[in-house]
Length: 100
Image (cartoon, rainbow, N blue to C red):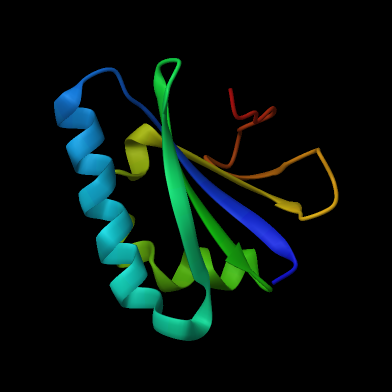
């Protein structure tokens, strides 16, 4: 798997953490063997779900229905596994993406 796809949300409390874990589990079931849901982190005011894939755009499209209710609250980007800079995917006007 060549790329890291990162789904990022604001997160500050237990309810946000529980919602992140629930979404992570749903994504893992939906993707099966087509990508690797490689965990999450939660802290510094944000939560991230990490997905290893060869085609970040296709994976994002595949899970679009699962993300429909959280899309207004998320940021998404990807990077090649041996690079540091992210390419933003969502929202369309997202200029800079970083994982704290």
